[in-house]
Image (tube, rainbow, N blue to C red):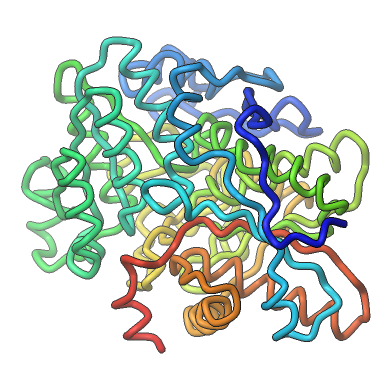
Length: 428
């Protein structure tokens, strides 16, 4: 293997296509259902909510999708991102395991979310849409979408979960700098928000509620569409650029991972890093364990029920076949607000059901302990969400020490925690 700590690709080596795992899944996911008819949802039924090109990607079974040149132009501002060998962490753990991480924190917004924000803004702009709405939990997605809209000359309204709006104020400032309007959800700007506040004026919100408000605004305003940062198939598709780059970089390092780990909220970063490697498991039978690291307080894959459920609390979305804690589930107000979602999404849930991916729950204290250890060895203060993946990577490295196996572990560092220092102050 190369002795270098950081493994880089040149700009010319950046993938020019996204990978669609649906083409290789032995058991295809159950269809989304129209909640009014309980019949499989048709692509045209999603077009009032999403750009047409995104609905085509959502229902596509095609293995490879070309990345538009306009999107590649902005990707090249920060991609390819580095793959890093965590030598100092390995030494601290005294493990024979080789630990690598894909560093998505180097994007302009500090997280992986820009990978799908850019194409979503592009396809809406191409269609002539002028206004977009979305939700955000901890603020990473709202920030990424705000910058993407700035690039493509569109305006954006963001409904931010109220607890995060209050505890992570600088995320709101970043979104405002990029030109977006940000409301604390639930709020009085939508009928659903007013309904929630009438029942509970002190409600601190959830992702399900924020999604409902964003969808309501999208469908009740002209020239407006909704954009989503996780869960749906087209979002996971865009994020596979992470794993496709990592695949090339791991080959350069001389290793294929035994374990691929990502924190799990709606599935975008876990899927982005793991799906390109799972392709080899599905098509070649290569040994690989893909592990979704969930917060213990919101462990839908680990402790949820597989069934059809709504993606939001107001029941405005299609019915999604997935592991869920129930669309009305109100998780604890943990610092990793980006992982506080009730459902596991269509694709990841099917893969979990078929035993092709696994999941585990991580307590908030363990997650932050892992984040501090990582910061002290590798020098990067991780996002609270990323801490869950780091904690599982540490678990696996300790297992390797106990068994004496020199396993190769890859995890996705989905973002930095520079705007989450108050959370560290509270937890450490």
